[in-house]
Image (cartoon, rainbow, N blue to C red; front, side, top):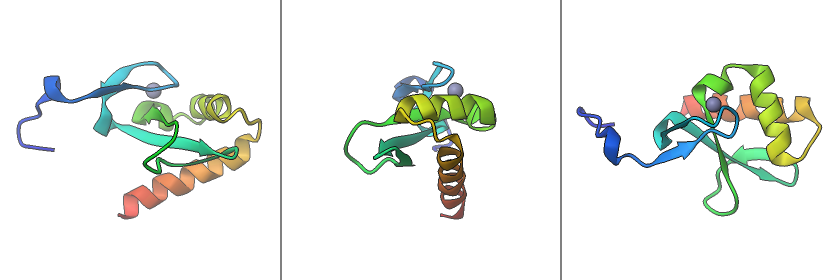
Length: 90
Ligand SMILES: [Zn+2]
């Protein structure tokens, strides 16, 4: 981010959980591949989750299950934690 946040020029995206629109860089971009979530891989259908929702396990689990059409909440949540941990490392 620059020193001056050029808010009005930033593209906004909608969080699939709370449906709030916000700057793309405040959202985590994910995609479902064969029933599991991944970081966005540059092609295919993707969706966004905001930090607020990511911090609320119940809320985010519901959104992930809906996006992936999967009932395997534990698998989705474990994968999400991996993705977030990875993102913090790099
Ligand atoms: Zn949200």
